[in-house]
Length: 152
Image 1 (cartoon, rainbow, N blue to C red):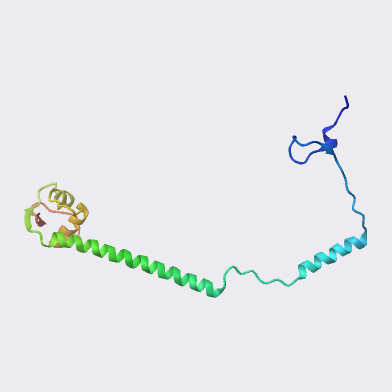
Image 2: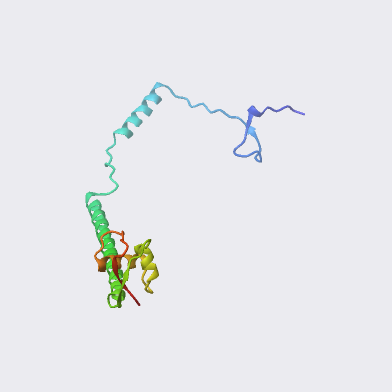
Protein backbone atom coordinates (compact mmCIF):
# COMPACT_ATOMS: atom_id res chain seq x y z
CA UNK A 1 0.00 0.00 0.00
CA UNK A 2 1.28 3.40 -0.97
CA UNK A 3 1.66 5.94 1.84
CA UNK A 4 -0.05 9.26 1.15
CA UNK A 5 0.40 12.51 2.98
CA UNK A 6 -2.45 14.92 3.52
CA UNK A 7 -0.41 17.99 2.68
CA UNK A 8 0.46 16.69 -0.78
CA UNK A 9 -3.13 16.52 -1.96
CA UNK A 10 -5.99 18.99 -2.01
CA UNK A 11 -9.66 18.76 -2.83
CA UNK A 12 -12.15 21.35 -3.99
CA UNK A 13 -14.69 21.51 -1.17
CA UNK A 14 -15.48 18.36 0.75
CA UNK A 15 -13.81 15.03 1.35
CA UNK A 16 -16.35 13.44 -0.99
CA UNK A 17 -14.39 14.80 -3.94
CA UNK A 18 -11.44 12.93 -5.30
CA UNK A 19 -8.13 14.34 -4.10
CA UNK A 20 -5.73 15.76 -6.65
CA UNK A 21 -2.10 16.76 -6.35
CA UNK A 22 -1.21 20.34 -5.34
CA UNK A 23 -0.18 22.55 -8.21
CA UNK A 24 1.85 25.72 -8.31
CA UNK A 25 1.69 28.12 -11.24
CA UNK A 26 4.51 30.57 -11.81
CA UNK A 27 3.73 33.76 -13.63
CA UNK A 28 6.78 35.08 -15.35
CA UNK A 29 7.49 38.72 -15.62
CA UNK A 30 9.87 41.32 -14.47
CA UNK A 31 10.12 45.00 -13.70
CA UNK A 32 8.33 45.94 -16.93
CA UNK A 33 5.27 43.85 -15.97
CA UNK A 34 5.23 45.34 -12.46
CA UNK A 35 5.49 48.84 -13.95
CA UNK A 36 2.59 48.13 -16.32
CA UNK A 37 0.49 46.92 -13.38
CA UNK A 38 1.36 50.06 -11.38
CA UNK A 39 0.46 52.33 -14.31
CA UNK A 40 -2.89 50.61 -14.82
CA UNK A 41 -3.66 50.86 -11.07
CA UNK A 42 -2.74 54.54 -11.11
CA UNK A 43 -5.00 55.07 -14.13
CA UNK A 44 -7.89 53.34 -12.35
CA UNK A 45 -7.47 55.58 -9.30
CA UNK A 46 -7.34 58.81 -11.36
CA UNK A 47 -10.51 58.13 -13.31
CA UNK A 48 -13.08 60.87 -12.80
CA UNK A 49 -15.97 59.64 -10.69
CA UNK A 50 -19.21 61.28 -9.68
CA UNK A 51 -19.53 62.21 -6.03
CA UNK A 52 -21.73 59.84 -4.09
CA UNK A 53 -25.00 61.40 -2.96
CA UNK A 54 -27.79 59.04 -2.03
CA UNK A 55 -30.46 61.76 -2.32
CA UNK A 56 -30.56 65.16 -3.93
CA UNK A 57 -31.50 68.27 -1.95
CA UNK A 58 -34.86 68.36 -3.68
CA UNK A 59 -35.59 64.76 -2.66
CA UNK A 60 -34.57 65.50 0.95
CA UNK A 61 -36.80 68.59 1.00
CA UNK A 62 -39.78 66.64 -0.32
CA UNK A 63 -39.19 63.85 2.22
CA UNK A 64 -38.95 66.36 5.09
CA UNK A 65 -42.10 68.10 3.90
CA UNK A 66 -43.94 64.77 3.73
CA UNK A 67 -42.76 63.89 7.24
CA UNK A 68 -43.99 67.22 8.62
CA UNK A 69 -47.35 66.73 6.88
CA UNK A 70 -47.72 63.23 8.37
CA UNK A 71 -46.88 64.47 11.88
CA UNK A 72 -49.38 67.35 11.55
CA UNK A 73 -52.06 64.94 10.35
CA UNK A 74 -51.47 62.55 13.27
CA UNK A 75 -51.51 65.34 15.87
CA UNK A 76 -54.71 66.86 14.48
CA UNK A 77 -56.38 63.44 14.29
CA UNK A 78 -55.48 62.77 17.91
CA UNK A 79 -56.83 66.17 18.99
CA UNK A 80 -60.10 65.70 17.08
CA UNK A 81 -60.53 62.23 18.57
CA UNK A 82 -59.85 63.44 22.12
CA UNK A 83 -62.31 66.31 21.65
CA UNK A 84 -64.97 63.95 20.28
CA UNK A 85 -64.56 61.58 23.24
CA UNK A 86 -64.74 64.47 25.70
CA UNK A 87 -67.89 65.83 24.01
CA UNK A 88 -69.49 62.39 24.12
CA UNK A 89 -68.83 62.14 27.86
CA UNK A 90 -70.15 65.68 28.42
CA UNK A 91 -73.33 64.79 26.51
CA UNK A 92 -73.88 61.80 28.80
CA UNK A 93 -73.26 63.75 32.00
CA UNK A 94 -74.41 67.27 31.15
CA UNK A 95 -78.13 66.51 31.05
CA UNK A 96 -78.08 63.97 33.87
CA UNK A 97 -79.88 65.00 37.06
CA UNK A 98 -77.55 66.23 39.79
CA UNK A 99 -77.63 65.14 43.42
CA UNK A 100 -75.84 66.96 46.24
CA UNK A 101 -73.96 64.73 48.67
CA UNK A 102 -72.00 65.45 51.82
CA UNK A 103 -68.40 64.20 51.97
CA UNK A 104 -67.88 61.73 54.82
CA UNK A 105 -64.56 61.07 56.61
CA UNK A 106 -62.37 58.77 54.48
CA UNK A 107 -64.16 59.63 51.21
CA UNK A 108 -62.16 60.40 48.08
CA UNK A 109 -63.21 61.65 44.67
CA UNK A 110 -62.34 58.26 43.21
CA UNK A 111 -64.52 56.38 45.72
CA UNK A 112 -67.43 58.79 45.21
CA UNK A 113 -67.11 58.50 41.41
CA UNK A 114 -67.10 54.69 41.67
CA UNK A 115 -70.13 54.67 43.99
CA UNK A 116 -72.10 56.98 41.66
CA UNK A 117 -70.94 55.52 38.35
CA UNK A 118 -72.68 56.27 35.07
CA UNK A 119 -72.82 53.58 32.39
CA UNK A 120 -70.46 54.27 29.52
CA UNK A 121 -68.32 56.72 31.53
CA UNK A 122 -65.03 55.66 33.10
CA UNK A 123 -64.22 56.44 36.71
CA UNK A 124 -61.42 58.76 35.61
CA UNK A 125 -63.79 60.78 33.41
CA UNK A 126 -66.35 60.88 36.22
CA UNK A 127 -63.72 62.26 38.64
CA UNK A 128 -62.77 64.96 36.12
CA UNK A 129 -66.41 65.90 35.58
CA UNK A 130 -67.11 66.11 39.35
CA UNK A 131 -64.03 68.32 39.73
CA UNK A 132 -65.24 70.52 36.87
CA UNK A 133 -68.84 71.07 38.05
CA UNK A 134 -67.76 71.60 41.68
CA UNK A 135 -64.81 73.87 40.75
CA UNK A 136 -62.29 71.66 42.58
CA UNK A 137 -58.67 71.94 41.43
CA UNK A 138 -57.21 69.14 43.58
CA UNK A 139 -58.41 65.73 44.67
CA UNK A 140 -58.45 66.66 48.39
CA UNK A 141 -61.84 66.66 50.04
CA UNK A 142 -62.89 67.97 53.46
CA UNK A 143 -65.43 66.17 55.66
CA UNK A 144 -68.75 67.94 55.43
CA UNK A 145 -68.00 69.43 51.99
CA UNK A 146 -70.99 69.43 49.61
CA UNK A 147 -70.48 67.93 46.14
CA UNK A 148 -72.77 67.87 43.12
CA UNK A 149 -72.80 64.40 41.57
CA UNK A 150 -74.57 63.39 38.33
CA UNK A 151 -77.08 60.59 38.94
CA UNK A 152 -78.47 58.32 36.26
